[in-house]
Length: 305
Image 1 (cartoon, rainbow, N blue to C red):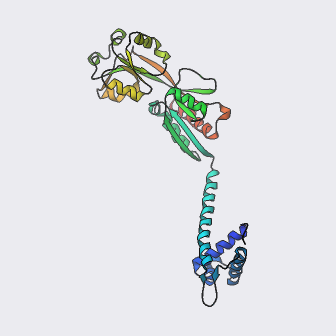
Image 2 (cartoon, helix red, strand yellow):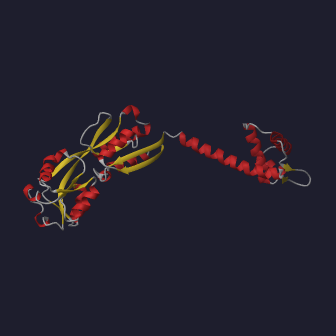
Image 3 (cartoon, rainbow, N blue to C red):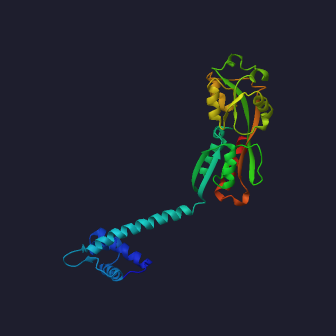
């Protein structure tokens, strides 16, 4: 009865399978490079370890017993499991192994010459086997997700600084006020002043914007903020409706402006700049995968600076 499986048992199973594949002991001599008597002894040893007969061998030829046929099926499963284990073990030897979860505000992936995409490309050149997950989130949710460990890296606009997070400035983004071609102000776009635009309905961010808090206060006082959006795509939809004015990142609006679908109200006066940051947890609790990605992001930023 085989209660424990040893290296010897594995070698004997391999001999048994080689004999089965060759169709007999005599034919297996060349494959195994051992004598017929040695093979016979090894098969007998395996049968003794198992406690039952595996095959019939003699002048009448070689044939498997029913239990021998079952062992062939079990042995194939065993060798497949061993191969899968070896593959997994080799993967574990790689320098980086694990997951990397990145969250960012809607338009950030395409900003500043695609810094996120370039950092990911550099990271993938490493010796790694990392599952990468990207999520689009609002600034407030990004900070919460990093703090709770749901994501490792957050990229977006953050108007305050939490003491348990690390902030690194990536680039500055210019936001400009726009109207659509369907808006009544479109023919006058480019030279509109604040007094003119304050009389019209606006879409505003659902989060605080200290850079334009005075404008927001004036619009609120006059009841002109009639819609809220937490991402650029939603803001653009409302502006394109022809019933709302709103701020968009200049690079984000570039294509619809070229197509004549949007126009800046006054790109010199009705604009502001925000700083896009990358946030992570404190250094001591970051994984080596995260540290490697941060190093690649830093190297990429030096290249495009």
